[in-house]
Length: 609
Image (cartoon, rainbow, N blue to C red; front, side, top):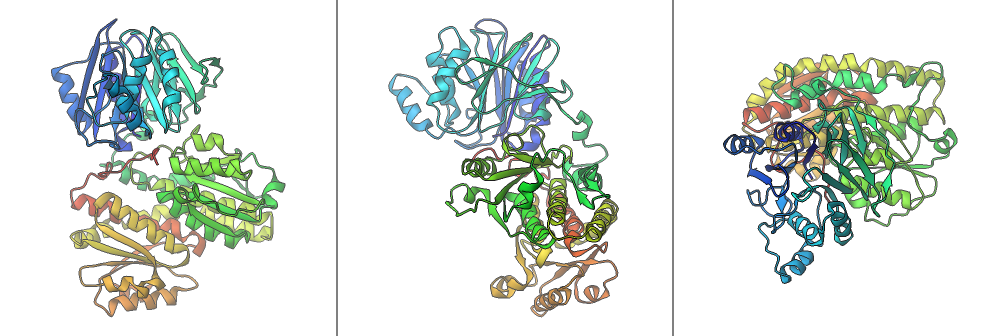
C-alpha cells in the first residue's frame, strides 16, 4: 500500500528508482528495495528494512546495474519489517521478481497449494505468493503468466513484475490499488503515484481496475483482463516537481500548513459567480435539476476527510436546508442502510484512492444513487468512478498528517452548500454576502498563521503531557476532533476530541493538573455556553489552552494560555480555528523528537482495508 516505481529505458535504472522512492516517502513505509536486470539471467536484488537511507547505503557497497528495474517502499501488512519481508519478492527459481501494493486475502491457501508442490518460501508476506504463482505459470511470455495468475488472487493489488527471461520488459496490473504509467522519450515508467515520476515526465496514463500494462524503452501498451490491447488516454500532471519540495521549511507538514492561504484561493478560483451569487464547478457533470431534487445527502469519508465531512454536514444543513448524514466509509460500505432514491452520496478523500471510501462509492453506485467526489488527486480512482466531482486544487500534500487538504475540503463543501442553497431558498443578497466572506478567507488564514510563535511557546509548556482534551461546539466540534487527531498522529500523545457540553458526561473524569484542555472558544451564538464549559474545567484545576477570537478579553481572563485568530462568521470558523491546532501538533511533535512527516505506523494513502 506504499510506493511502487518501475523503469524501462536507456539510462541506469538505480538512481531513477531511488529518486522515485524518495518522492513517495511521504506515504509511510518501513522497508525499501529494488531489482534491476542486465540481460538474460542477470537479476540484481537489493533490499533493506528501515528507511531508504539504509537501502542507499547498501547500494553504495553493492550497486545494482541495469537500465530496467522495479522498486518499492513497504508498509507492513503481513510479517514484520525485516530484510526478508521487504519487496521485491523473487520466486524460488529466480525467474520472477514482484513489487505489490494491496492485500491478497487468500494468500494462505495459495501458499499451502504451492508448498505441497515443492515451492519453498522465504518470507512471511502475501506478496511472495504472487511471484511464485507467476513463475509457476511462466512459459516464455511474462504478460501471459501474469494474466493467468491474476484470476487466482482474491483481494487488491497494484503490481510491477520483471523476469530475467524478458530483460527489456516490465509488466503491471491493478485492482483496487493505484498504478500509473509514465510516458517518456525512449523510456517509460510505472508508479503507484504520479509524484514518483514528476521531474522525469509530465505525461501519465491512469490504469483502471483489472487492466494490465507492458512497458519497454520504446513502447507502452495497456490491456484488458483478456490481454487484449485497449486505447488509453494520456493525461498531464498539473503540478511541478518543486511543488513537493521543502523550500525554506524544515518539514513538509509545516510547509503545507503555511500553504493554506494559497490553497484556499486556488480552491475558489473561477468558481464564485458574482452575477448569480452562487458557485459553479466545471467538473461536476451533474445537471441542476438533479441537484435541486436531492432530498438527502450522505457524506462518506475516513480520517481527516471524515472530520471535514462533519463540518460539511453543518454547512449544507444550514445553507441549503438539506438533511445530511456523515458515515465512516469503512462502516458504510458494509451497512445495508435504507437510502432514499433522491439521495446524493458524496465521497470525500484527499488521495482519491482510499480503499474504504472507494468501496462505499462503488456500493452506492451499484444501488443506483447519484455519486459525487471531492478529492485532490486528478485521475484518481474515486474521481474517475464518481458520476461527478470537484477537485480541491490544493497541490501535492506530502506530509502524512493532512493539513491543507482539510481546509480545502471544508471550503469546497462550503461552496457546494452555497450552490445547493441558491437552488433552494438562499436569496441573491445572502449568496453575495457569503461569497464576499469566502473571498476574505485567504487573508484571514494568513493572519491566523501569525500565532506560530505563541503556539510554539505553549507547546514547550505542555509537550511533556501524556493526554489532552480538545473541546468545541457546533461548527467547532469537528475541528476539536481534527486537532486531537493531528496531535495523536505526529506526536503520539493521547488526545480526544469531544463536543464541549458532553465533557461532563464522562470525559471530565480525566481532568487534572497534567491533562490540558484545548478549548475552541471563538465568538458566536453559543459562546456563553462554551465559556460555562471552560469554567467547569477550571474548577477542577485543569489547564486550559483556548483558541479565541481577536479581542475576546473574557477568554483571556479564564484560560491559562490563549491563541487569537481573526473574527469570521460561525460557518467559516473551522478554517481559522484549525490553524493553531495544526501548529500545536507540529511543535509538540518537534519538541518530543518525533518524525513529523513520517509518523510511525501510518501511511498517506490507505489502499488496504
